[in-house]
Image (cartoon, rainbow, N blue to C red; front, side, top):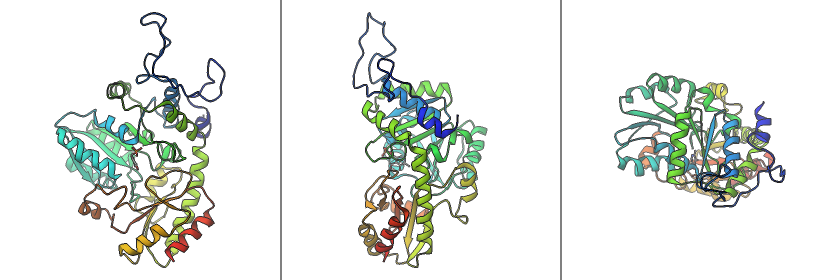
Amino acid sequence: MQLETKLIHAGVEPDPSTGAIMTPIYQTSTYVQAAPGDHKGYEYARTQNPTRDALQNALAAIEEGSFGLCFSSGMAATDAVLKLLSPGDEVIAANDMYGGTYRIFTKVYEKYGIRFHFVPMEDAQSIVPYINAHTKLIWTETPTNPMMTITDIEAVSAIAKAHDILLCVDNTFASPYLQNPLRWGADLVVHSATKYLGGHSDVVHGCIIGNDPALHEKLKFIQNSCGAVPGPQDCFLVLRGIKTLHLRMQRHSENGRQVAHFLRSHPKVDKVYWCGFEDSQGYLVARKQMRDFGGMISFTLKDDRMEAAAKVLSGTKLFSLAESLGGVESLIGHPASMTHASIPREERMKTGLVDSLIRLSVGVENADDLIADLGQAIG
Ligand SMILES: Cc1ncc(COP(=O)(O)O)c(C=O)c1O
């Protein structure tokens, strides 16, 4: 079955009691048993919920995995993967990533005795010097947030497999429509489903997808034991969002292409970070592992004073100034003070995340309107 068909049908069966074509929102905390242990597969809603099951099955199918597990946010999904580790373990992570992921690594898990090494993951070989007997996990995003750096998943996975290390890819920026990391050798994929999977800026949600039954058991145990599960209504919203993922991603990518080229040709714009430029850092790898290049773009102005960036950030009318990304509406953001404020400045500067960097989540509106909006704000 092709992805577009899976996005509509995978995981979802007509409701057995009514035939409802959409899986109902099973808003219940518990399930009646005829006698102790005599139940229909559902005992308590932290452990199982039919709406969540439908979404978990759909996510597994569209990410080419054998299991999907849902969480109350992208960070809760990341947290569950980290709980696979033990004190003394080491993690090698990309040096450009969502600020909240950096924060949970350094501010939450370091104090439990886990060590993190940050490397420029776009060079797969940069991992090698940090590998030792304690290395248990490699973590990357691709494209990264916010510098749009591309990791060659296949190359990193070859190194990970040779040393028996888990590889987890945060696929939030690409979405399962643009990229399926398990196909390239990742062991686990995480998503902030708050973004493209949900797609409508109306839900906070996260998930993990993988193939290994042993990892499934361990992560399911963590999901149930720690309890960061999403409510059924949130699962329903993501399930509904998935049905149009292909249509939205095609339009995000098309609009992204037009906006990126407009910015690059603008006399006041300095650098534009978008993985679809043929001369961009990871273009060939992106072409290999992605179906298209998406709608996430970062840029700087030639006038690198913060006041100039601030004028653009508050000058757009269609692009709303807000955290988050991946919804149908276009957003503009300031990573240094918003999504990446928890990364120390000197660390940010190493990857090019300067104070005046502007990040765009290009929505699915009319591209000419979006370009006109940016044009008037840049001046
Ligand atoms: C790449 C990436 N991963 C994970 C997260 C965290 O997801 P959530 O906000 O759903 O917890 C975000 C949030 O912006 C993100 O951009």
